[in-house]
Amino acid sequence: MSSYILRCSVCKTSFETRRGWLSHLLEPSHQNQARKEIISWDFEKRACVLVAFAGFPVANEKVLQYFNWNVDRDAIVTDFVWSEKRPRVGIIQFESR
Ligand SMILES: [Zn+2]
Image (cartoon, rainbow, N blue to C red):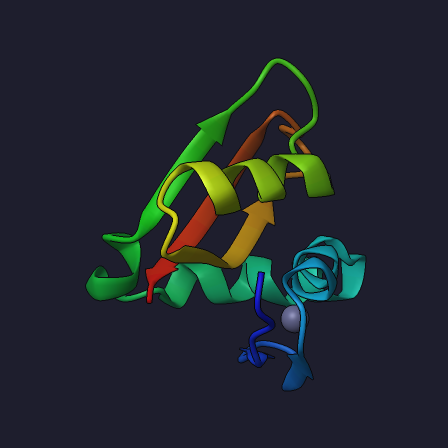
């Protein structure tokens, strides 16, 4: 798969690979900021959001990779937020390319 330049609007950092990007989304420092930002997501962003309920904690790279490849081949996960209080629930934001 070709690489992308992915920019985190929350942390103001850039990533060239999906793998680096997805692991960034899981970092506590990103999560802390993203949880604050999720409140301000507008309608357009919310239309591209999936809420994932799993039987296991969702905050891991395999879960993000699963959604990244299987929901839509042209889509990319643009953000991910999970709740420490409910670790089996995650909010996954997508963008189509
Ligand atoms: Zn970030």
